[in-house]
Image (cartoon, rainbow, N blue to C red):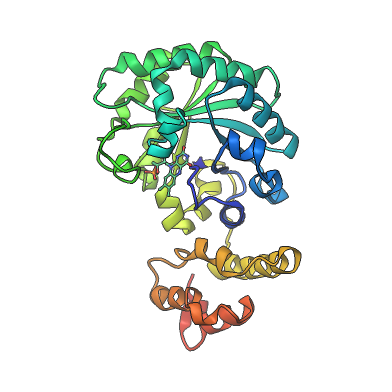
Amino acid sequence: MSVAPMMDWTDRHCRYFHRLMSRHTRLYTEMVTTGALLHGDVPRHLDFDETEHPVALQLGGSEPADLAASARLGERWGYDEINLNCGCPSERVQRGAFGACLMAEPQLVADCVKAMVDVVDVPVTVKHRIGIDKVESYDFVRDFVGTVAQAGCGVFIVHARNAWLKGLSPKENREIPPLRYELVHRLKQDFPDLVIAINGGVTSDAVVHAELDRVDGVMVGREAYHHPWWLARWDALYYGEPASGLRREEVEEAMVAYMEREHAARGTPWHSIARHMMGLYNGLPGARRWRQVWSDHRLKGEPAREVMRRAHEGHSLALTP
Ligand SMILES: Cc1cc2nc3c(=O)[nH]c(=O)nc-3n(C[C@H](O)[C@H](O)[C@H](O)COP(=O)(O)O)c2cc1C
């Protein structure tokens, strides 16, 4: 199981939060471009908490030498995996000629992968789509995976829909092109020795179970972010651990302790951390009011612990399972 890389969402605070609920799920950073890493503030992009392992750094780029240098930095920083983004359809990313448009250039992706594999010991993996624009044939993605695998990539995470590079926003590109899981299943049949993980539209344990019969892994994005408590079941369901007995209040309490530490160490305001846990109580009575308190901008000057007290004031969330 893994939680997908999501720009502006899966920052280090979000990953810390997710890790509190699942010990084993693999977590991905937001995409970091090679330009930002090689010319920018490296600690800002790469710092993470030791508890986040196993954690993968997702890179965006298309220059083999830059990717190799970035992958090395990532490995030195302690990341467990380096992942190359070949699935992002945004205009900005297309202008940089990376992301999903790289699927049209499998040999370039192979060169990028080889450059990284040559300089790091951790696995180099690729996240991609099943096609770009109106290419519907299976052969396209099969040849892409075949070419890139030869360069030393053994793990492919496949977002099971096309990226339409013109006319759709990134958000629409996660919703409108149809999901075609069967192509991902065929990849696993044709490349049994590769690790193939499926991504896109997975929102239930029933689907996870069904997919794990056909492929090696499942990556969940939006559902994990909006309903994070789902992760609290994954260690027991998918990693053979005993049920944890963890309660949502314990996670919230641990997050407040983290907010206090982050505030003391770096001056991080609690609300830039709390924004990721807004879905914690989703589905329970009182969840809306709890969320409203935690997102009330008038409370920004209050300490996080006081905000938590107010969020639980006068109602029974603390008694819920
Ligand atoms: C807000 C947001 C940001 C995203 N940013 C990235 C990214 O940086 N890199 C990437 O490979 N995919 C990115 N994605 C796509 C997700 O990783 C995932 O492939 C997609 O949401 C489909 O999975 P899902 O249906 O489980 O959400 C992003 C998705 C969302 C919702």
